[in-house]
Image (cartoon, rainbow, N blue to C red):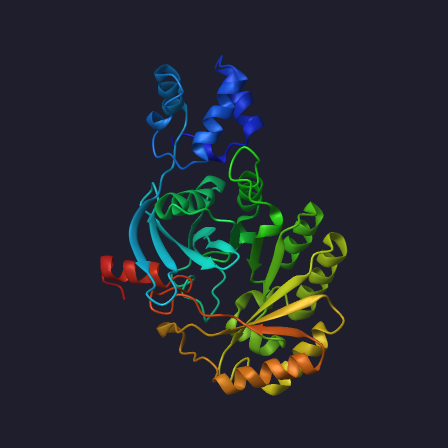
Length: 348
């Protein structure tokens, strides 16, 4: 039987559990601070007694991912990490430098069940969801490796965050703890492929995070072709949930839109998207498609991207083209993990 993960515990939970072990409450604060500094072993907690460290080791699992691969972009300094988890599974994270601070793109699952045609993350399906502590580990150990503080987080790596709802919510609360990293909710973005019922559930939490919707097409026919989730939650149902989310939280929603040649980049689709979003407090992020060999899809030309953006803005919808980071390091979701699996098991 696997021991419970100590890093998944909030400070009040840790205080309660240590109290049951006969320990004083201040010990929980000491341990919590060590955990959120990215220690790999209980023995690194130098101001905690050897007896208590042994007790912690007996009762809890302390996760500490290992760097399997690390790619540093010579173009912009972006770093792509491939981590090995305690059970041998692998996940990816990306460390990005901006003028306003460092951002981290983290994974929420090993693999993904959504099956989006343009994404390498879902090839092979879902293996398992990550715990809150394993999501947190990606931040902690990127900071430890780079020696730099991360101030912004995007839950946009491998996996569908709202398919791992409870653990992702716990992660958001853990990473915001004053005694830990204290990264506020307004510095966190969560990207979903459109699980409308979970968006409704998230709205009830009234968090101050930024919600990003992976829309990628405004019409049900082409969206269902590239995103199977649309068959369960068509565009109209999804956008109704988005409207309720804004009404309950007051937070503007960002719409991610991948520009795919001949699939999502046609002028009539730009006009349809503008009609759907007109009057909503929304921002459209146009994303040139990252090449995934298995998809058979191709990115739009720069001219088509510019024309699409122009149509949106003429119709009153704010749209920007996402800056491409790490073009020389397999920086898009799932690519590095996919390559590693192929090299290790000869399946690529």
